[in-house]
Image (cartoon, rainbow, N blue to C red; front, side, top):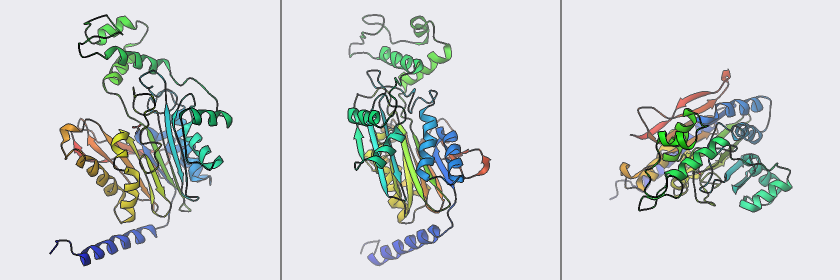
Length: 363
Ligand code: GLY
């Protein structure tokens, strides 16, 4: 006889469903969570919640601050470009009260793509617009067009190009045939106007292409929820590559009856496990937000037969339940440090705080 009898399974699912029903009966409160790059985002979103604003307005206005910030090279203006040096942005939104969604992908020259995804949701009967169509829609809706490549991100892109070699070790981009891969000393000669700090940054980004992003989830005191995810995607990607962020169910998912979830990190891994949707369904069946996130990380690990040496990437999940419980988890804690995420529940005045995520593995 199976170790897991049908009666046992039914009793277990009844217990977890009861636990969820009990937890979801708790009085809702204003709370915003995001990836670690969202301290200011959560603060802005909380201001909007406290002044009675809509949860989707709150998260979109929050991430807009990050999209506008050239110092964040994973989102919006100043995001690292594709392999041709062109910034292409992806974003999605979900609005709990109306149960609607919008998304855009592969958008060039439009900075505020979370707002653009919200505009797709509000002004069309579609859910997803991509590339040139999304850009033309943005123009029609009055979004300004601008070059999103900063001098800093252009330099990082040039350094990445100079680091490439064909199988014989040759490169068209520096020093001719058989030239050694660039090092910081050579970069100093090639880019004499760049500061040491900028060169070190560009070198690091060339060697470790980032997959940052911002995900933000909000709950208000009426129990309404919304979420958004916005990104410039994987640095140096093939033009047209779309990550998980604009995919409803992967980079973002929210069910007003249960809660929301989102992701940052290497999107391809998330798409294969429908991460955000799986987390929400885990919470529906009674898992805590943290355990729901860890379960999805285990599914990603399973795709590599749990062989850590093959998992040469990292990925994070964030979850907020409709009773205000929240959590986050990361595949790898690295270098003895726990990864973090941002929280604003009003407990620190207007300030957001960072909390540690759970980790599945360390390295
Ligand atoms: N998670 C962002 C991306 O992979 O595009």
